[in-house]
Image (cartoon, rainbow, N blue to C red; front, side):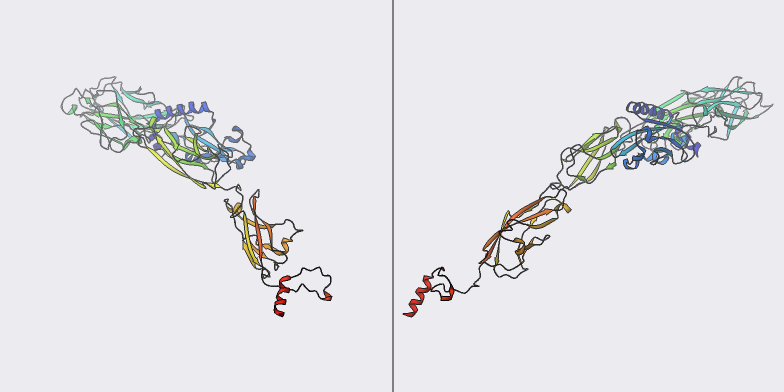
Length: 592
């Protein structure tokens, strides 16, 4: 399975190397922590102390919420928050991760959330020689005419080794025989094809078959090898090989090309006639990722795609095609197919961090969220512009090539707006442009910034004298725009001028409802009216309050009989009382 995965990635090696080179150059400009680990290292192996390298205090890692922000990297690495070490979660197979790319670097971001910061980390996976060379076929069969000239070359199937550098294939050797020797031919820098060279003329009547063993060896320590069995059939006179019109065929194909479209034609000719000039085309050596992707017409040499092409999965294909004439002579040519990226992927928006609710007294510039915007396409198709489309007091600030922070632009007021829907639109620069929309719900938490307010600054309450003690006589109500505890009110009577009027002996107030109760009966003849102050306090911190005045008017009742003030009886003391002339006049009239 490792060999199959590595073979699948080998066809895109050149582009991956270019990508990593550019990525490494970019990272080095902005600063990056770089580590290395040997593939197949045991689970839990220490890669490096990331806390120390980032200048973080190990004791604060849990509080700072240090974490890896990458779905790929999280499968392979973890951070020990007790000692700050970056450790492997499982054994890593470099060939599965990077195929045949010479330098295998896994880059990811490490996020510190308190305070918010993003660091870039690169881990190089170093290759070990854990894969032997392999041939895609167990047997190579050749038909060679007995009149083939000495020195004629026959291109053989090359072996594949997913390892890189010194661990990749270094040489081929051929089993001992009297007629053939081996030499190597470079079609490209990465691919070396072994060629079988006829050193001694063949004689079918003497020997009509040859059985040889081709061995491919890598340069690792210890050296690993792979073999293939070569069976040669000597045929009668067919002295011309097919010849391709080009050694290397190239085609650029859009990834939107429909299935079963013609990619290109290969063409070979044979100087022989009749059956010996009858050419059949076939696809020879091809990585697994292209095995089920393309087909070739055996007679016309037309190459078509059998499935939809996807630049994001494989950007180029490399294969060899074979032309075989009726006499069994074959020729090979190289086919390079480059997939052209099209804007077929909309940007992706993900929330890496979100602080909600946010206090309404947060200063402008407060970070409320970290978002990640990514587009799988390349070039302009993968360049993304991001913006907030709502009229909200927030804005986007680029943090890196793919990260944005959302910050406040003004002071918030929960009493005006308690919740915001922040709509983010990410649009790529392809033609036509594709976009993605994401809505972030952000709540605003309350602070105690509003004092209670009474419905009226002054109230007037009427109570009849001789009232029943304990009866409610009035109710006051205040409103607080804050929420929860900040809006929970407590009512009380403010004691003033206790020496003039003992308020608390006459009145009490329910601290929750604001209902005013009479503690005792009122006497109009003693107190006709009086004023009290009622205060409402909220439960916020700091506590806010407000007060209102209440005028208590005692309503008179006919609870006193008339008294004769004049003439005074001898026992009524000093004649200092007021004379009621109306009463005397009434008596005088009745006597008459």
